[in-house]
Length: 301
Image (cartoon, rainbow, N blue to C red; front, side, top):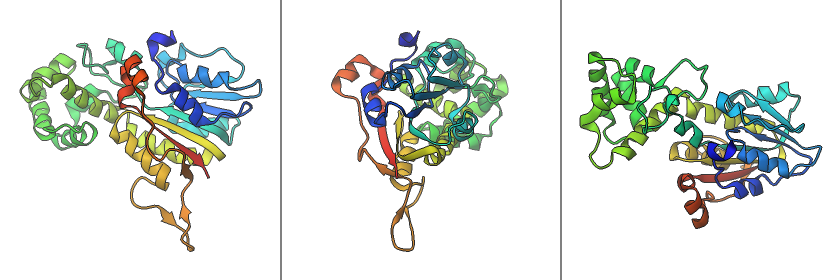
């Protein structure tokens, strides 16, 4: 199941980054196909523990039958509370692979991919209320402009938002075909795929509140990691990489690092990687998804 589900990116680099203690407690907050989790388990002895989070019902089918493995059917925004419920106040390492799994892109009915004409859903958590169709049909022009511009870095975000709002008056935008019809005049010729990928990224981030969830999660990691514990985060676009980079370097998302009365920096992590770790040529050839991956590692002070 796991192989066609999602090929783990930068697998060895993630494992090295976690600096695994055989009897430690580790958390994989983006379980997916379980590729990273299976590799972590290989490095644990009988006393080691691995806790995996995933809110996607499809990921539950990949659960690992192992007494050391615990599966949490939740979004990683609820990291701290769920670890407490399981009886773990502190852990030795946390791994987050923020990419949408290739499995999710390959399931037409999930509405993540621009390759299929399907309903515009895009919920990671199928219990969630907000869908991409609802965003397109109910948000104001100003709000759509902001989402397309900030989350999708779409060049003509303003005119795109206007086209959506005008188009939905005639008929609601429920599918990819509806959307393309409404905005056809604004899709740049010869760059259709890249453009649609940016628009879909913006909608997906909004539907799943991905940036808020990420920042919320990062703050919690500082509370639950033991001193010397590692945080390993892999992101796939600048909107995710920026908060990760800032939080690991400064302990905050904006502004300069706080200092105490004596001028000592007040931040929870020291950087293990000064620069982001990227895939090498061999991996790029093996797995095209690794092209945009950036891996950052911090150690809890």
